[in-house]
Image (cartoon, rainbow, N blue to C red; front, side, top):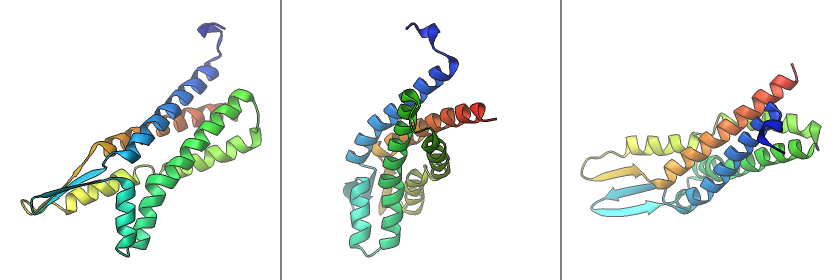
Length: 167
């Protein structure tokens, strides 16, 4: 099959697949590398998302820890698996009824995609104590932003394709 044999919808489907796979690839190092670096009293401490969740739980900040856990780990995994399922089920032409509902759910939770990046931005803004303490975004923050952008693009492509077919 040559590239020009594909229908335009199939091109978009493969674009969405590419963005979803890119997000999956970025998600792994985003959880392994430091999300932020804190410097206080001359000491440096790097923290991954999981470190942050654990520290919040250990400090009794259950609600905040749960929000960070959901926004940074659980929801992105759900969104990535859902997007992948939607695309593969479309390619294999299975689970037609489930695709639309799942895509609507992915679009809904997508509104909260930048929450973890937003939390780091707030931390950086709040903890600017000059020479006493600083917080800086680290490599995982940028990787998470890449995950968010890729999943938003994949979701937008799928949503446009779905809306175009069901008008």
